[in-house]
Image (cartoon, rainbow, N blue to C red):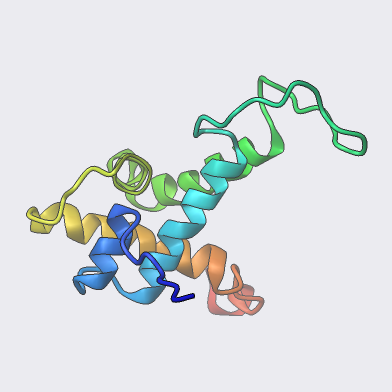
Length: 132
């Protein structure tokens, strides 16, 4: 049976296919998306009760939600609240900014920073020697 892979399920997938994002920027966007999914920011069907071996989740603040917040805080601390807002709106809510060069540049900067800090090993162990 022939099978096909859908390549443009999300806006950032389309940006990658159109050459607007690099592969590392796209992976950073997918990383943010997966954290949001784990944090329960997307609606999912509710199960009637937790199965055995499954821990009941705290409805107020989960560890996953805190990890998602820390990732976006990396962007906010480095570039400011607008970049943080832009990443969330484009990646999670599909706000198309492809026609605005300034917004695309901001998005790329933020995704590069997430890629560098979260996907490429995080902190440099020699940072104290470089005066960082």
